[in-house]
Length: 260
Ligand code: COA
Image (cartoon, rainbow, N blue to C red; front, side, top):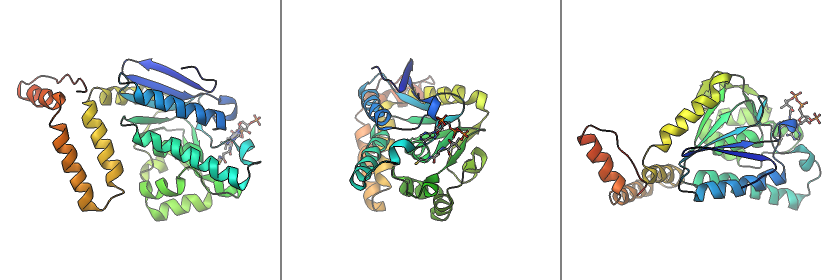
């Protein structure tokens, strides 16, 4: 996999995916989004990759949003297509069946905040700033910010952020539930890699089913979501990993999961 605007590094079962346009604070243009789509597809298909860390190049930005040069010249039909394409790519993060940890190393604004919200878990450097500033450009979020933000932080807080366009600190983002954890900027990648390694050692099929149960279940009526959970609970009982996990506990040793 070679890309102009992405870097991919492997660290055992963990892949580190870095958006690499630091001169424009890693803004997402069409090419970068397309590269992200291809990279996610390949990392999703690669069974040796068990967890992914997503971050931005440099120490200033995770992603400072969609590329405003492209936004400035978009047409109504082009804008709709651009939003749908981006939504689809971000959805693929939630559907890939592997944990994706956003390591928010600086500005996560607009599409950058939306990208982080599509990830499984968000770690933020104490220097990070988050927000949905689209309103200040006279536009609305187009990569599901109006949907994921209220689901994460509640309707009132989401509306305040969406309507003011204000940037908030990592600490405030943590207080309202937008990020899981705030860490010293110098420790961010170490912490993100450590968390990814922890998740990479878990049973991959159980990880996938938990992701599916939460993701799909939240969009379903509660009784149906419980049925989905019960079905997955039954399915996972067919795995070697379940036998290994329960046996290892009873034998007082660490389980070695194979993803089977
Ligand atoms: N799209 C395109 N270019 C962007 C960009 C974006 N979303 N965000 C930053 N850049 C570019 C700037 O134009 C600048 O380019 P230049 O060096 O050619 O002038 C470069 O990145 C550095 O940004 P700059 O604004 O000089 O840095 P700053 O530290 O003064 O401010 C921000 C940082 C993040 C506050 C500011 O860049 C900003 O507000 N960016 C836009 C955020 C936004 O509205 N995103 C949502 C888009 S939907």
